Amino acid sequence: MKISKREFIRKSMVCAGGLFCPYFTVNSKAIGTSGPGKWSKETMFYSVTPRGVKCGICPNECTLRPGETSDCRNRINYDGKLYSIAYGNPCAVHIDPIEKKPLLHFYPKSKAFSIATAGCNFVCLNCQNWEISQTSPKKTRNYDLMPERVVESCKKNSCESIAYTYSEPVSFYEYVYDTSKLAHEVSIKNVMVSNGYINQKPLKKLIPYLDAANIDLKSFDDEIYLKLNAGKLQPVLDTLITLKDNGVWVEITNLIIPSWTDDLEMIKRMCAWLVSNGFSEYPLHFSRFHPTYRLTQLPATPLATLIKASDIARREGCKYVYVGNIPGKGMENTICPNCREVVIERRGYTILKYDISSGKCKHCGTKINGIWN
Image (tube, rainbow, N blue to C red):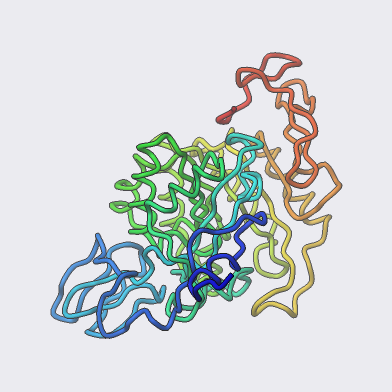
């Protein structure tokens, strides 16, 4: 039987988990640079100045003359207005276990419908997803997946949440905001995996529709933030506090990179700040670095360094400390802070044991902070 070219593309495209995606890919080159099109939307936070339009979404606050593109490669000044060109055109669509985000205290064993567009407001030398984060939506092969279709796909695939992840959700904020709002209306949870580099006004506008976030706290030093990530520390700390104070479940990831972020005194200061600012009962994930992108000359993080960092965090008062990228060592198990029994045993993203009932340890009745099934 003869089928159309469009139908052939639709049937040939396979999404995450071996599921057939009902939406065809779009040619990224078809996204125009001369003006807004289908995958463009006027942004929500910008000001018109004599020097051009000033973006207000993140602390970079790019000021763009006509035709210029923002640092995140997602925003363009067209005819005196600021448009996002990352709207409804994700380059990555997958179904993930929520543990992959990583979120270990938020609806364990649930599935997250994960999406990302190209672009990021950081330039991390160690980026694992640099092929999509350090480019533009005009240069990636994308899905035609408007907010309504994201929610529809999430429901069809029995996912409990939508995760905005892989690249940087702040850079495709309007897409995140509109999708989150629609998802919230039908009781689908929204999860943001982010560097936390966002201004307070757009963050507070998004928070009513946001259920959980994993924030990547790159280091605890301004100079390292500048040289490693092209950012600043304080806005990320402000994001953490704002999320927590407004009831969003927060987990924090700190990637330990040899010669960059492995200073144990700095890690101690970071953990002390987290505890003194009310994060002692929120999970802290130390993640192992593997050579990639512009830091291929470095070794992987030694296991001994990760263990020392974990010990420091616990001594400073962090109750739930995890180590990622070290399989088979039991470092991603959840341990009751009172009786020290393992209440959730994990192997990779699989849960082997679950001894939490009504949010409490089954062994001693101590509350285990989190949002449980």
